[in-house]
Length: 429
Ligand SMILES: [Zn+2]
Image (cartoon, rainbow, N blue to C red):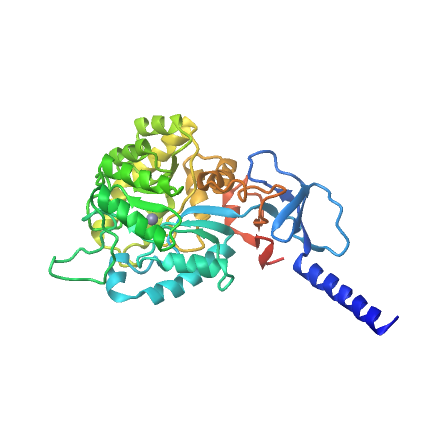
């Protein structure tokens, strides 16, 4: 072999080696697979992953030469979980209205990175972030995760709350003479709402979060009261649509819920006082979805005092808990799709799967809860072409748990393996 031929041969070899390293084929095998579509689980199951995608799923697949095999034994494999309601930059032990006075955006960002990793390791590979206390910290977190600088779920972020003055997102509960750090999230009237939304999109937001009614964890207007008018909500939806984006509406009270559904928001979050009329409206559309957050009740009532939650806010939760549970059961009885969200940040980060247990306790079949947290949530986000099921062509977002979540959905808290976009994040086996 001439020197030149040898060099060419060596270059070809080097190319082959680097190509192989850049496009590894991985085969993940487990005793069971719940693929997110709601059908009978596959047993046993093999998933062939190439780069960031799933290329084949079957009971028995041929293992390509040189493929890495990850054998998860008796575990149950599922799609990466999706949470439609997280607050990664917040902590349950720091009351958010106080946060503005006692912390800063840097602290929120660092804790956001920590909470993002904890959430990913708990099996949540995609989250719709529902707002940071400090505006646009969520945008920075999303970007850092996408760039691979910090581990975390794929994020869809709102940048900043859009809240009415004196409403659920108005943290400035002080004398009008007291100025607090500038958090420009208050918008009243269609004009200001449109401006706030444009500002958020300009600064990197993916969607709009509006606060249509009062909140539990806020000293402002009570949770049941509608605060944004029908006209204001319509202005938000209209502006978001012009950008091709969605609106998520924080809504507890029945009138606010119904106004938001009629205006065409994508989700009504919490939906505490969901009544028959609201359920009927939701049943008629596949445009708006109800996303309850039930486990929050346990945490606010039980851990609230230790976490510095004001007594008035704990009392609010006690009052509406029975309504929240009844609303969920009403939706369940009607058979409408129920999205999955947790309000993590109110509940501890990484405990997101507990919400499934709260739903099971109220009568939801474990499979329905699992489909909600995977395929249905992907549909709600408009990302069902990418995530939500274990099927060829989808991103390789996989999670494996110990035990059978169909027998006891609590098994979803025993995560042993997480893969996001083909990269192994966690493997305890
Ligand atoms: Zn929330």
